View (cartoon, rainbow, N blue to C red):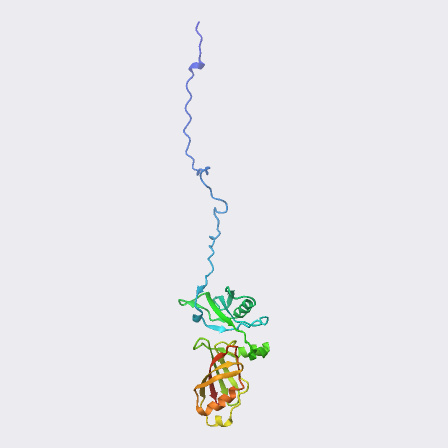
Length: 277
């Protein structure tokens, strides 16, 4: 008997057609970083990197021009004693002092007096290599007690007014007060100037001179003299350059003028201009 097994000998099926290549870009894999929504297609400008502020340039004080000076005042709470105070100033590009750092050795209350004064100084815009810059410089002020000086008898208003009337001069010699002034025929005294108004103070008390002195004077004349101001006296007064006819009148006039002094004395180099106009 023969059995037919048709299923076992069925014709083989045709293989499936090959897959068409995909036109879509492959998606990100776990190892491939993808763009974040903030970065993808973002229209924001790139972030600006902040620049560091301009560092101050070290400039010697002799190269800086001061427009406004406020001299430190000797603290009223201190009974006496001398002290030198150094302070580092930061000067901005507009000439203003933005920082006053008192150096070690300047003790209270001198430190605050130093800060108060120098913070009010105004400079010409500092320059370095032809460019306006922020500057760093060190300045010094000397607090000197006026032992027995007429300054002790002056009110703060009178003292400040006298100091403001002075213009600073550069010293010819260290330790000497360089002072100049102009005396007019009317008795008015103008153009007060000194190296350091607080130490080298001059208060002209009257400027009466003989009328005959002015009659023969057609042009301004100058007298230069030196002396030591000590205990209210002018010790060793000496005329270095002055018309002999002016010397007696000058000495008589100066007898009433008040100059600052200390226990050790203050040396003055005084230039007086007599102006008949």
